[in-house]
Length: 269
Length: 110
Image (tube, rainbow over all chains, first blue to last red; front, side, top):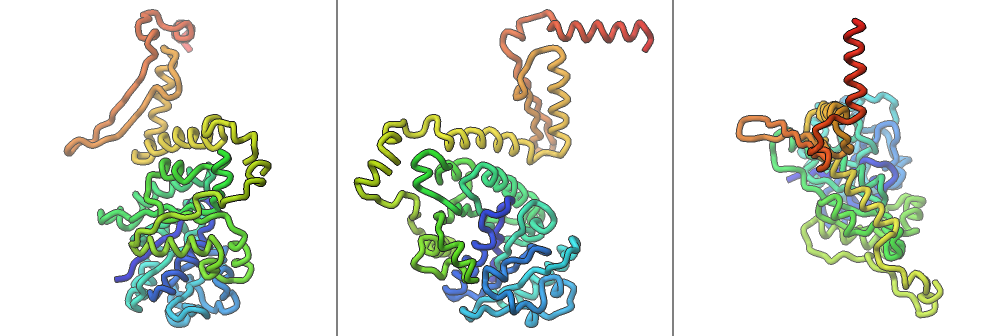
């Protein structure tokens, strides 16, 4: 059974592509045949984060328009055998994607026996974002502890509940997950940042994970390597935990507390 | 956290608390608009404007909800009037002025 997961947020720059890359990589590492699709037509970036930008030949729009085959279009990941990337097109044509076209692609992916299809949504609530979430069985709502991000996440939750295929066909609703990124426990402690509890309270959806603010996120993107592969880093470990929870494992949340400091820095910090 | 912030009370007055309070109001408001048809916010505003002509009410005093009861769609209107205003039989000075203006307009045939 193929499961389709959309990574969405409404607001831009909160870590959707970083999250899509890490979730896809994490699932593939656990043995699932996984494809990650970039829906950001015109602003392709998943290829850079996955480190396969030089191997893009065909793209999603080619595949939708039946100008290329699935086999030709999918880019096989260099590191993991059962991971594939489906890049977005750089066309400026806004109407390049249609629900019918995407439906054909989804059908092909299901026939190719993928376990997971990860859809990396563009920012906003325009056609591209709606297309990315239309076929979702589950949604990972990526949110920063910041007022505009929380508000936009709530808005995208409304769209998931009214404009996804599951809602339109009166099927079971899309399963929602909250992923908080760029979390800084020390600022939360000082009352400068919304806490995990605040955000969960406001959005009222189950928490999938907390990704702490970490320099390794930028460094991993510099290198074109999903941050989940950086097992030393807190962000990498947090993504790994999130994958376990996505697969149904009950794991306690980490990275919510300030790292212990010495007595001196505590007094004068 | 330095030695001084240690004495600051935990949550009150922090910007995080302000952020949460603002979001709570905003999100509740946006959610109530979300499930209805697009005209509900406009309908709400029009009703509010009409009531404001006669009674001095706040922006949040009118709620318009579209619900369902069995097979019917139910439009639920909730108007909260300020307590002292309800007792007042006299229309407000503003309403009187407007009414006088309207009458004058009718008389002068405009």
